[in-house]
Amino acid sequence: MTTDDVPGDRTREGVPLYTPPPGTPGAGAMYPRVVRLDYDEWESKGEREGDSETLLATFEHYRSADEEYAPQPYFPIYRSTDGGESWSQFAEIHDTQNDWGLRYQPVLFELPEPIGPWPAGTVLAAGNSIPADRSRTKIDVYASEDHGRTWSFVSTVATGGRAAPGVGATPVWEPEFALDADGNLVCYFADERHSEKGYDQCIGHRVSHDGGRTWDEQVLDVAIPNSEDRPGMPIVTTLPDGRYAMVYEIVGPTYDGGVFIETSPDGTSWGDPAVIGSPVRTADGHQLTNGPYVAWTPAGGDDGTVLVSGKTLRDRDGGRASGSGRTLLATTDFEDFGSWTPVSAPLWFDDELVVEQRTVGWTTPLLPTRDGSELLQLTSTFVDEGRCEIRYASGALELE
Image (cartoon, rainbow, N blue to C red; front, side):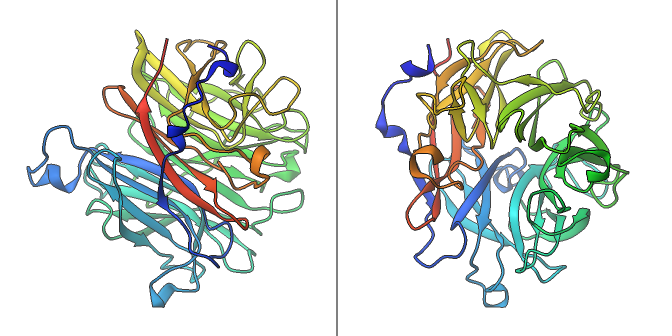
C-alpha cells in the first residue's frame, strides 16, 4: 500500500471526548495522552468482567469548574471501563505547589511494579506548571494511589525559563516516563537551557531511584550542536527483545520537523547525542513530521510491529502528502528501522495544512489492545475560532 491508497472511509472521524464551550481560552483542548491500567480498582476488588479494560486519558485544558482553581488551567482525568468505547470525566489534577496551574504537556504512567514508596498500580502524572504570564516552566510530578481518583504532589523534575520557544529562552517541555532496564523511573524531556553548548533545544533525561521523589543529574540523549535544529517531544516504548525505542521531532532548517527513531539497550544509554536516529519515512519519501507517538503491537510480524503517528505526513518536497491526517507508518524492521509502510489510522482528522490551525494534531497517542487486534487513537481536532476538541476512535489494524 502507498499513502495514496489509504481508503476513504469517513466513518473514522471518531467521537468527541471533550468539546470546549464557546469562549474557552487558548486552544480549547490539545495534547491528549492515554494509558491502560493493569491494576485498576475492579482488578483489586476481584470484579473485572471478561476482557474489559480500564483506561485513563488526560489533555491540556484551559478552564476549571472548581471555584478554587477557576482561573487556572488543569489536567482533567477521563476514565473508560470498556477499553475506550466510552468515557466519563473522573478527576482533575491541580497545581498544589506553585499557584500557577498545570498548563501544558501532561503524561500518565502506571507503575507495573513496586518502586520507592509506591505499590504496583500507582499512577504517575507529569506536566508543565506555567504561570499566566508564561514567565517560568516547571515539570512537576503527581501521584495517585487510587487509580487516578485523587492526586498528590511528588517532586519537580526540571525548572526552566519563559514558556516561549526560541533562541534566548530557557524553558523545559514535554515530559515522558519509562522504567529503565534496572527498574528505575526515567523522565525524558525537551530542554532549552543549554544554548552555551550550541543546542537551541535538546532531549535529555533524569533517573529516579526512589519512585520520583529525587532525581539524578540530567543526561543528554539527542542534541545537535548547530544552534538551529531542535529535537523535542520524546516518546519511548519497549520492544520485545528488551530494547527501548524513542521517537522525536527535529524542528529547524535541516530537518523541518521530521520524525526520527532510535534505540537504547537499557532506556538510559542512547549513544552520541549528536548522532540522530533513522527517519520515519517510506521508500517514496513520505515522512511523518511533528508531534510523534510510538507504540509496539504484537500484531503483524513474528516480533510484532512498531507504529508511529504524527501531526502531518509530508512528501519529499515538504508538501502535504496524500493521506496526511489519516495515516500511520509501520515497520517490522527493528534493526535499522529503514523500511516503513503506510497503514490506515483508526482516527482521521483534517490536518493543520488543511485547517491552518497549528494546534490540530499536536499529539496523536496510540494504544493497541493487549492482543493487538485493535488500536485506539486520540488527537486534537479543529472546531472553530481557533479552538480544538479532543476526539478518539478505535479500529482494527490493516497490517500486511
